Image (cartoon, rainbow, N blue to C red; front, top):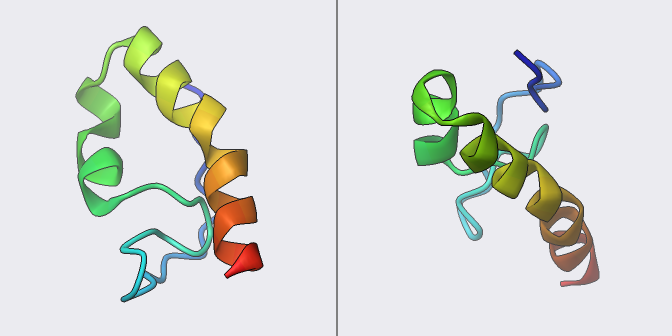
Length: 56
C-alpha cells in the first residue's frame, strides 16, 4: 500500500497537519482502512497543503 509517510511525525499545532507527510491525524489513523480512491484523493492534495503551509 502506497503511503506518503516520511517517518517525520510531528503535528503542526496551527494547521493540525503532520510536518512530514501533510496528512491530518484522522487521515493518518484511517489510512489503512481507506479505499484506494480515498487515499488517492488525500495524496493529490498533499502538495497543495505543503505549499500553503510554506507560504504562510
